[in-house]
Image 1 (cartoon, one colour):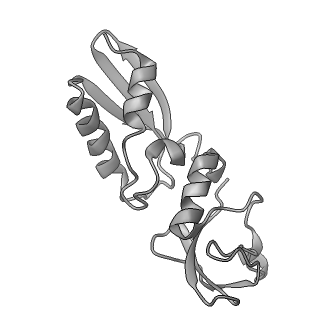
Image 2 (cartoon, helix red, strand yellow):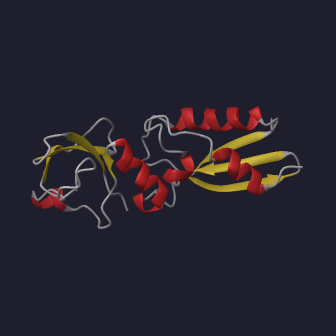
Length: 161
C-alpha cells in the first residue's frame, strides 16, 4: 500500500517541461494528493490558465507513477485559487538563479502600468543595473532582461499573485 508521502516523493522526480531544472514541486503547482484504496488523485494548478505545458505535465505525472506500478491515477486541473509565484519554493528560486533565470521579486509587479520596469538582479553577476528588453521572454510567464554590467541577457520569471 502506497501512502501520500511516497506519492509526493515520486512527484518530486517530475521535471517542469519548460524549465527542466525545476520540478513540479519546486513550482508549487501540485496542490493535493488524495489516495483512496488503489486510486491516486493528484490535483495541479497551472502557472497561468493558458499554459501549454499542463497536458504534458499531466502525462508525466501519470507516467512517473506508473513507473512505480501505480496505475490507477487521475490528475485534476484546478484554476482556483490561481497559482502565484509565491508558491515557488526557496529551492526552486535558487535553481532558477543557478540556471540563469531571475526568480520573481517579492512584490507584485505593477510597474508595467507606469512604464517603470522592475529592478531585477542579474542571475549571473547579481548586479541590479539591469533593463527589460521585452515584456515577453522564452515563454509567456517570463520577461527578457539584460544586465548593463556583464551584458548577459536573461529571463525573469514574472511575479504573479
